[in-house]
Length: 133
Image (cartoon, rainbow, N blue to C red; front, side, top):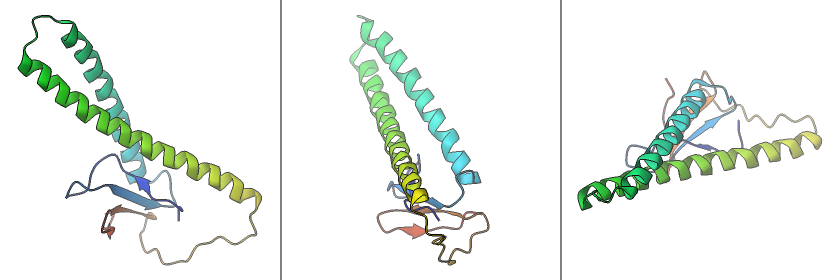
């Protein structure tokens, strides 16, 4: 099982951060999260491009600028979540690289996972576990 849960690019039911705990970086939920991150970053690029155009338009009204401001906030929030998630995974891979050189042969698997694909999303702060099926 991975040492650090992966921050998912979508919030939990109450708006809290959601995490994925898995030993399979290519699980269905991992791939879905990867695709969702790409969509969020692509959307952020689109919002930024539109915002630059809107800010350059002297005829843009206050309502239009407020709308663009809200979309920019949403896009920035999503991009920061993606950056935090990817940064956490970079530090995980660096830890794994240093662990590989010190490996004593112990797999570290406690054997208490009963998920068929080895992954389960976890929401915080109460860290509740949900079935992945």
